[in-house]
Image (cartoon, rainbow, N blue to C red; front, side):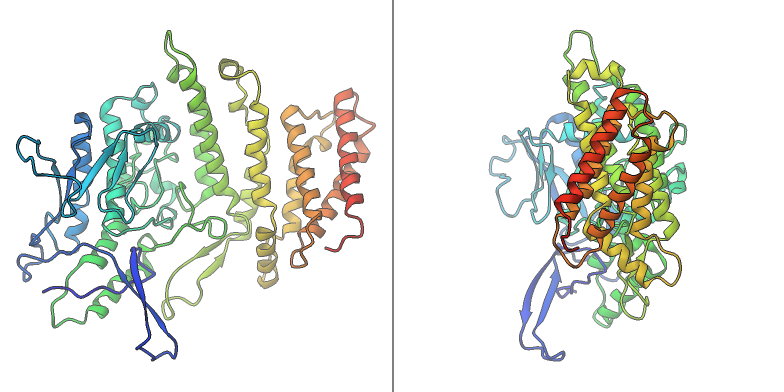
Length: 549
């Protein structure tokens, strides 16, 4: 039976095409109709539960692909075969090597009837597949996956602890990228909700990760298992997972002519009610902390705590891993920046817990609400984690054994920029407004932004509570930056946010604390630093005196 076009359902991730239906007036408005984009698959024997298709989906491995990677590209294509078995198709998708020009001189990758994984000579560190049925692999995708894997998984994989990595490992990483991009060409967008349905314990479990991968969907930006610790034995790479099987079944399964297709599709979708790993969600990190990119696990604080342990291990091994006799320090410098980039990503995952929600995209009848504010205690844990691990100087980046090999200056600026991202991520009108709304609606205790600002100020100025506390260069930079950010919020004239009022109150409190220690500091530098901070606060308050909040 030739299937009819399948209506798009926002609960399942599919690319789609749409048009406006002016003929249907049942809801008294013009309706936007969407149909999913998918390949045409028909069973050779419709009566069989599992049948070969009349015409399988075929992707050729492009002629420009280096020989040593061809088998991995083919494996990445055919990794989708088990998922299609859930939809009733055996060997539904095949990878084939492009024929030698001498064997088939008429074969042409530009032929619209042929789908090919194209390997392009380019310095671009990427690959892509959405809306393109000839996915592109840029040559320098090798560097991209090497860098990702080193900073995310080398603590647990001895093969990655000395660069260059062996070809068989790079091949596995290329296979992962191919499977992801082929997924796009099969119709699947990114599913950023997927990775948040696995627990930290599951991510450290060898049996669980072998069976289910590091996330339920290879279409998530879950990357590699930075949560697993050395000795856990857990799998480190994403794979086509439970959600992918679910989505393929929903999108590609054929139903007999005497079956109500819409009813059968709804039965498949209903599995989401009791099984979170089957749910779909677009990227929405600043609002929904369960729809972030490049994150792992349902507990961002605990996952990042374990991730930081691995980053420290990797940083301690950085010189040995990257430096070779007679070579310059370019690779060391690159990987130093990559580790800092991973630090930024993981800290950002924790930032988004604060004032965040969990969105559950279930329809009426299956759920009484869609948005669930994060628990108060979880938000407080997130802020305390950031104070201890992000806003205290991350010493893994200040090791002289590394720094003096790669630069004469600029490390302090890099660290300040990283810490500033944390501060501006937490203290901005969008997040503060949402927290206040949640506090107003909460029936019990809720983490109010005034409490968050108090906690931040105590953490950033912890030296004021310590007898003879001397902030180092990095802390002085952070403290100045924090006060500047609070001062800048006073300049905003918006009347729909309490942030300026809260920032003004916090600046006054900090000034009062600085006043008590200004004359107590025995050393010249801390003393002039405290005086300078007071002058900055005074200037910010005077500049905005009388300005409406």
